[in-house]
Image (cartoon, rainbow, N blue to C red):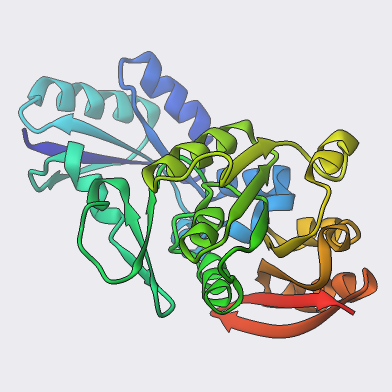
Length: 309
């Protein structure tokens, strides 16, 4: 089936109102591209803004439009859409899309990711591929952490040099479980993931299963170590490697509790830090009694390795 991509220009209009009007006239599955919508989202989710795609922000600068898709043979539908847009005073344009198997083409967005000297992140549908690298097999669509982000890659690269056979690892903000799985692939005896999102717990457990890991080697739980003393008590102990790949504000907040999980030879690896937040995070970690031993950079992102002072 051939499709048309329809663009409705809503510049100077309320995009939500325009979308509601189109929906009321029978046009659904609309894609809204509105810079103001993104800015509102950022304001409401400021704690997570470090992970907003800067390229996406640039693409949306000044944009106010709605996209939808029609079967290219649906002449009546296209005529009705043009009539509706004329009534609303909205410019509309259409262009044909190449015929594509959409049920499979989305997978092209998740190629294998070679990381460091020995690791490769594979989507689960390519998990059987032969490789000399350690496989990290994931469902890339179910939680944060696909191996493509510089912050995650830096942690994995430091882990290659840090994780030793038999190590005990703690992953705070485990997301998809990618770092816990990496630790086990590198020889760790156990990896424990913690995330505040219950969906992440399910995702991490599923991804661990793709790699052949389950309890007691791999465990994951939901909770906030800053607010849940029972959770802190359940995690009590010394870990050889503690992983914190989140955002600057959360790392700063976690800094006072991180030392509780460390021994004299332990390493904590913190990433997800924008260059403009580097000094703040460094100050928080050092204020909590940690010494920064390594600083790594990729693009505008920073990763620290640290130990107890």
